[in-house]
Image 1 (cartoon, rainbow, N blue to C red):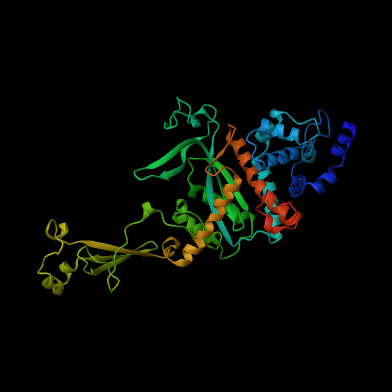
Image 2 (cartoon, one colour):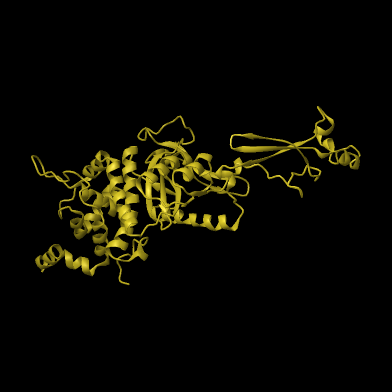
Length: 433
């Protein structure tokens, strides 16, 4: 009886794929992987045969999609699913040990994994599944495997930037969330990295990178925008959406010059000045609510500045009407040079200042940014991703495979299973309609 059970289990995998949505799902995902990425994938010469590197990629895809937190748990999962082990390319009962998986992450070039992802995304674009007319960018925190990140550790000293975690030499200190409280903000600090990604409006990752926390979002955005332009045919006039963390002048220029598109980014509050109240002649009002007088204007680069001065000091009729006194007793009216108050209006043809953020059009377009937030929710934990690795190179490979998994799900649903409505539905992409 046991012998017949083993024969039916181990030798009729095709029937299992046809009857089980679980195995049908992974069969479609693995078939979406491009062939020929790894040169000399398996050792066919002198020495031990070893394991195919493509098999490790499949195993790590399973690890991410099943939300398995560590390599030992992955091996336990594969051991409990011998059919899936065979589908990955390992022999049943002969799964590699921990060191083989760690060695693969440590020795594989990140560019090789990026190449796999690029081929998958290119296929989705060619099939019309992914469009390049609306793009979104964001980043997510990755917490390093360190006792400094353990909030129950009584000797935790993560507030000190000078005390570098011993096993995480490239991790940096940063915050991953803050909660607005009635009296103050709650900031959670951690040692780790950030993964940055540009996604399409369908929620499919296009380009990504993982770097230490000390590189700001706008700095990384420059690199990703140039990479996106180099790899994919971005549609002219595309829309680029980002949060206020990317509000830097050169980001608008990159989107305009490199992508031939328009950036929709809210202005940072710390970079804003209180807007001037304007009178009927579009001149600012002074503190006494009197429209000021134009005096001069000049050009500074691509910005034009216009100067306005106290109306009582510059207009005789207004001075007589106010009895030569400032209605609000402004300090600059009677003291010092007695010049009166001044205000400046600035206009610019720079795309950052030409964006009208208070319009319904901007608000409607910016609401699409929730696509990248939902993408990160599918990618992992809501606030912060946890890694069990120590070197940045290994963490980069781990996160590239995580992003690759999302693109493979889309390719499996849309191209292999012909169900484009399921490109974001990992759990149900292979279930019967």
